Image (tube, rainbow, N blue to C red; front, side):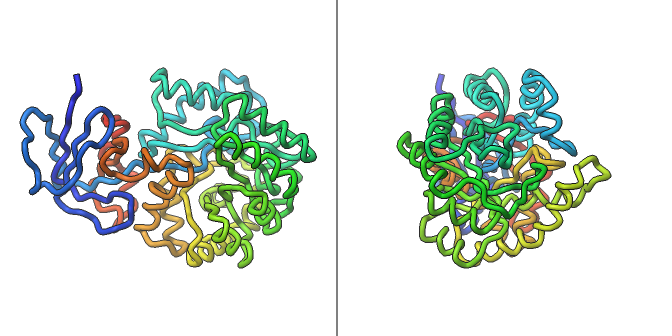
Length: 396
């Protein structure tokens, strides 16, 4: 039977960035919003289940553009994942999925997991076998021999090998490709600022993804590597720690998203070696943290498109911690409304799912959060969500 539910009386933040709309309603029918408007326009509501949300605030579910669902946010996540069985890793990931959903993330993008575990988890969520947000999965990240993330990635060198590595991930079921343009903080012996895969190598992988109608994301921290990735045709730059004016201009010109992940180095510095984080990771995070926030502020002011991502799974970067990223973005100069838009509509656009997700509009899936306070005045309310709805069903 086709159930209709009317939610009414709330203040709506629809994800588009416009004015909040008081005394709003929407009707949810078969997982989607069928009608939306102001309560005083309501007519013919006999036979509809009614949920009164007077005094509450409603916004779209958060969409996290950068997650590692199989990584456990301990001091040394890579040490752990490389020392335990795939079965144990999968069990951890099932628990992590629930943490995302219950804390208000209703969709995300997984950017790198070993052995196709992310594909199996994605399919299990879609089949209703396990509870969690729906997500897009990249499979193994593609990196140069010994490059950042090599221990859970697919190492490849030269244009032909990159093309083959890309085709392998697509064949295995990847929704997008993750390509490593530079070194990173959590891999020993590599420098975050140094370029790794060349522009020509990355271009081959990007071509394969685009031929298959799939997007690409690049771990890119150093300036030259960022430019190499943009010139290779990448769709989103992850981290973007050392952005100069030319890189920012290139991002705007080529319509490339920035997924800042400001919380990733922040928590490494915050917890430090005493929490079991390797010394090399702490040293590198300390070296990049301030520049990272300055680069983000500069890109935001210049008009670069921003999508929220946390890099959840890196040290003490918890799977229920997405609101920390919004707070850091606001502390770095973003308006609260833009932080919400980047975490809903911006992420949905970056992921290529905006037709169905990211804003609360007629025809879209009913993924939404009910909040006790106005998040525009108090982002901390996102740490204490009243209720989460996924595909029209109340989760908590």
